[in-house]
Structure formats: structure tokens, C-alpha cells
Image 1 (cartoon, rainbow, N blue to C red):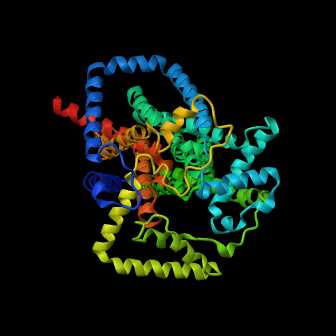
Image 2 (cartoon, helix red, strand yellow):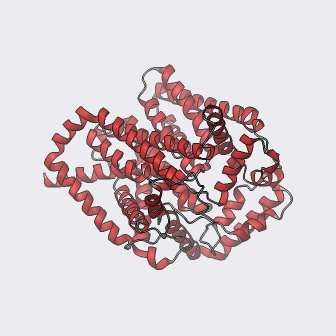
Image 3 (cartoon, rainbow, N blue to C red):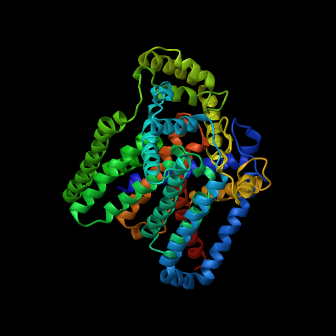
Length: 518
């Protein structure tokens, strides 16, 4: 990328992170937003503790960094395999003992998958998928998973969906480590990334909930990893293949959870900036990569519309579809600070056609913007930012009818412990969510330093492109949630990307301190 565009990305990303942390530390408690987590202490206290932990890491690295690097270089494979196996075993066991049925959209997905597998097609809620067609792909994925388990094992159909999400989570943590190692070229930095991802993502309770937040978490880091590998690949055929696969999974991410596609948009923007290069060879290579990505995306679209959707027993009425104007309108709702508002849903669904619905939703959105004015809009967006970023649990337990029935099979020796951790009335619940908030506030604080490189000339062009993709992805995610419906849960897919960014910040901070110390 050009120096100007890189600098602009760095300034914008840093400004967003500073603004976000300022809001959380200064106004999280007093703003009293519609949905917000409550913890042992205020975010300012977590920030102080988090900075103290980072300082201790700096002292440890300064004193024993060389020995740690040598140890990790020698034993990293053994440690990685062992720790990932432990993570998977723990997740499978913990989810089995802590599982509970939940309401909201996740309940519809779960029931539809079981209806598809059991052949009970009349019970499928076609009205839901007509309105929210983005969840069709999710149903197909889990229908395949449950069908496979039903044919091979014959038991645990509901739990098989959770187990699949656990496998995706372990893959996510591993991919985060691989991206970090190639980004930092340091075992210490890669393992810091790995440990934080292990604790913050790997031990998250969200994998108990069968929904696109947990299912889609692997895709942003998979896309970044494919892009990273494609950037470094010297063989033209392999590079184009990687970008074709990237395009395929990027489009799959769009149909799973639209926010995932933001990473692909970031990659396209970085590529477009490369196209202005005066180097003819660079221009041609970039154009080929974009073409390969588009072919991969088109391939997924063909499979989705010709095979995936027809394979499900859904009767879709396209005129009932809820489109982006509805989410724009809802995101401007002052009553719930842009969070889900049932009155907005009732308003949108009263119109018979999609055209009428979209026009009416856009008119309400325009009126709400007009009513806010400039100062009112700043206030509204600031409150939405607190909603989106103010909960390190990603709003665990907030959705309607979140904690449902516990099936008889989900009772074993670990169940009492998991219930103490997962349920608000549990003795360990406040401790666990406060630890998550501590990690989250520390991550956001370190993200403020991520966009400052130690020496611009020391950064490889490919590495700079990867970093810019990461920054643009998080910028795009933040803007998306500010424009449309607000939910902390929508950030969860990008939790590993936030971890990567935070370690970038830790690295840069360490470099700055070392430079001042001489």
C-alpha cells in the first residue's frame, strides 16, 4: 500500500480505539446503556490491572526473553499439540455438563435442524427463514453435521452440534497462533497471542450456544491466514489457488454472518491500493489474485443456490424478507440504544412486499436521523459504542429467554461446576465474567498501540498488507455495528482478530520502552 493510505488507516484505527476506551473508562457506568455487563469493578480498575500485567510481562521478557524464546523454539510443537488436545477435551466435557437449551433465534435453528433430520418438515417455521434468510446456510451446515452423526453414531444429535463448534474453536485458536508466528517471527509473541486466545476465546462459554456467532468465529482468522499465505507464496499457481479458496470462504462467511465479509472487503481495499502501483508486474499479480478470489466467490454462490438451498425443505416467501433498511432503522432506535426492538420488527413486518417495507424503513431511519441532529447523533453513536464494546462476555445471557431447560443427558460430574460458572446465580459467575472483562479491557488498551510500527522501513510489504487488513477489518466492524443494529455478541466472531491486534500493540509498546531505555 502507499504510505499515505497506510498512515490514514493507522490514524483512523487508533482514533477509534482511543474513543472506545475513553467511553468505557469514563462513561460505562454512568451512561446506563440498554444492555451492559456488570462486574466486580469499573473499567478504569480493570485498565490499571491490565496495564500492570503488561508491565510485568515486559519485565519478564527483559529478564528472561532469550531463554523463553529458546525453550519455546525447542518445545513449541509438543506444547501446541498437548494444549490443543486438552482444550478440546475440556470443551467437549464442559459443554456436555453445562449444556442448556436456549431461546431467541438459536432455538429456531436448533429445532429446524432436528426437524430436517427427523423428516418433520411441517413443523419448520418457514416464516422465520422467509424474513431472515441469512440463517439458511447455518441450518444446512448443522443438518449435515447431525445427519452424519445420526448415520454413524445414532445418539447425541443435539450435542453433536455443540461438539462441532468445539472443533471449530480449537481450529480458531490454532489459526490465530499460526497467523501470529508469521506476523511476528517470534515464538514469544506468537505464544502470548496463543495464550490470550486460549483463555479469551478457547474458554468462552459461547460454544454451548449453537448459532452463527460461535460457528463463524473460525472464518475471519481463516481468511486472514489464507491471505497471509497467499501473500508470501512465490508459486503463481498456489497463490491463485489460495485466493480462490479465500473467495469461496469469504462468500460462505457472508451467508453465515454478514460481518465476516468485512474482512474480505478489507482485503479488496488493500489490493485496490496496490493496483495504483507503477510496477506493471505488481499490478498484474494483484489483478490475478482478485480474479481468483471472485471466481471462488462465484463458485460458492453457484453451490449455495443450486445445491444447498434446494436440499432443505424450506418454503421461502421472498416478499417477507427483512433487508438492511430494517437494521439501519433499528440501529437508530433511541429507546434501546440501537439494540433489538420488537416494535421495530412489528412495524417492518406489517408491509406486504419487500419494496414497501424497505421504503418505509428508510423513511423512519431518515426521520430518526433528522430528529437526532448532530449532537444527538454523536450521543447516540457513543452509547451504541458502549453497548457494542462494553461487555467482555459479548453479552452472555442477555438475549431473550437465554437460559432454558437442561436436558436429562446434560448432567454429569462437571455439571455443578459449570452451572456455578455459566448461570448468573452461580457462585463463580461474577468472578469468571470479571476476568473476561479484565482481558477485554486490556486487549482494547493494547489495540491503541497496534498501528504504530517500530520502524517503517523494517516492515515487510507483505506483513504491512496483513496488518492493514486486520486494522481495516476492525474499523469496518466498528462502523458496521454503529450503522446497523447494536449487539456486543456481533463482535465475538472477531475476538481472535482483536487478540492479534492487541499483541501487535504489546510488541510496539515494548519496542518504544526499550528504545527509551537505550
